[in-house]
Amino acid sequence: MADHDRLATIASLAKRRGFIYQSSEIYGGLRSAYDYGPLGVELKRNIAQEWWREMVLKREDVVGIDSSIMMHPGVWRASGHAAGFSDPLVDCHNCKERFRADKAPRATPGDPVAFHVGGKSQGLKKAGVVGPCGYVCPVCGSCELSDERQFNMMFRTSIGPVDPMEGFIQEVAGKELEKAQLRELYDRYLNESVIYLRPETAQGMFVQFLNVLQSTSMKVPFGIAQQGKSFRNEIKSEKLVFRTCEFEQMEMEFFVEPGTQQEWHRYWVDERLSWWRSLANIGENFRARVYEKDELAHYADACVDIEYQYPWGWDELEGVASRTDYDLSRHAEHSGVKLTYFDQQKNDPSTGKAGWRYTPYVIEPAAGLTRGVLCLLSDAYSEEEGVDADGEKKTRVVLKLHPRIAPIKAAVFPLVKKDGQPEAARRIVDALFKAGINAKCDEQQSIGKRYAKHDEVGTPFCITVDHETLSDGMVTIRDRDTTRQERISADAVVDIVRKRVEGRL
Ligand code: ATP
Image 1 (cartoon, rainbow, N blue to C red):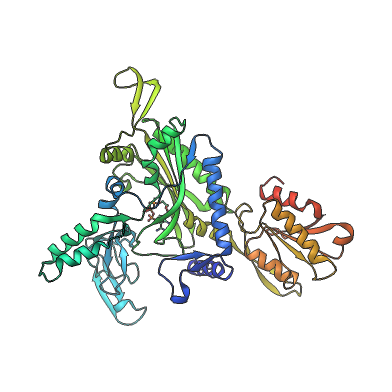
Image 2 (image 1 turned 45 degrees about the vertical axis):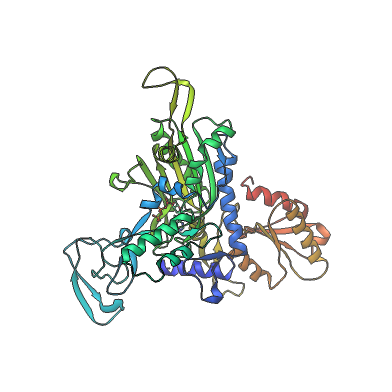
């Protein structure tokens, strides 16, 4: 299947089966916004829960928080986002596409290029030469491009009961002002009440460093983790939920002693890579890509992207950055509050005296949850050729989601809707519910169609109640991936499903 087709096929299944819908679809949809349907929300929560278990619950050296989306505007001045969180934006004069310069296809300055006028797929062709920028339009290949403009990606809004624009309107009404004067006044009024929707969850953890330290008995090295929504006014949203303006992140700030950051960075890259692989079918589709020196942010001393081979090729899934003491130092400087750690057991390396006060260094594994949903859907999607009961060629679509993240763990089918079978199926589903296992009782259509439907949504186990169940107490359990069927006792279903989901059987 071609790459484009694979993404389109996954998007179509996601919509048809209730994983991901376009937001506000009945109004024509909102660009870059998606809603998670009944199965999508379960999948997303399950991935988030696995991450939380791995990063917080299984460890004594990491604690969780949940900080607010709206923060003091000073946070963004200190973090550098207010001034520098921008992408280089370029307009194509030929096809009118707007794109990010840093993501555009590279080309050698001075090389000839040919492209269709107006970005059409055929017709009149035009020739040109690649400019000094060294890239061309990602859509039509044209070299007729605007200069780069920096575009701040933070969503701005205002807080408080007063409309900041009211004062602005009063002040400018009836006056003839130059553009620059208007801009200055506009910014002044806006800044009085401006707040931003957070573009990352990370800053919430840096600004609560001291509170966490004082309210717990954490000792360096330790981490603060959180999950939540982030917002970026992306120039170009793309590829289903890969890049959207509203998305979810799972981030952790791990505070370490200066000088130990290299080994901790290596540790977290290995941890994160093996975690993603543990939930996937094809481990080789995940890799760690080490940043070149010139790719590093000015404050980072190392960074590795965990990349996945999406239908369009290798791309970022998670970044693991070694951020030095930049964040805590900046917040200390801007807030005037000391954000340091005192280690009584260590000698200060600069004086040799007992006790060392220092600003911890930070390792930050920052993953996308919503991007993770797309990655794991893509990893799970498979088509298997086979034959049906009549010997006809048939393609079996299977979502091979790891049982731990599958939205429905077990589907229970009565073979027929009579003879006490629906009631027996219902008793099994109720027992599964009681054990906290998400199950579904499904009575509609033929057994074959019910299997096909649950293969497509990734249900790992299907249990069928048949004529003999009422006399011998046995049911059939079918494994989604192998399609192997076994007879087991109806009383053992809960235990067997639980153990298989947990990988203990
Ligand atoms: P990219 O280079 O793809 O824009 P980034 O390097 O800016 O990503 P980070 O700031 O490191 O991303 O954010 C950490 C993670 O958050 C990313 O690896 C990605 O999984 C996720 N993420 C970032 N931006 C978006 C977005 N607009 N939509 C969905 N997920 C995102």
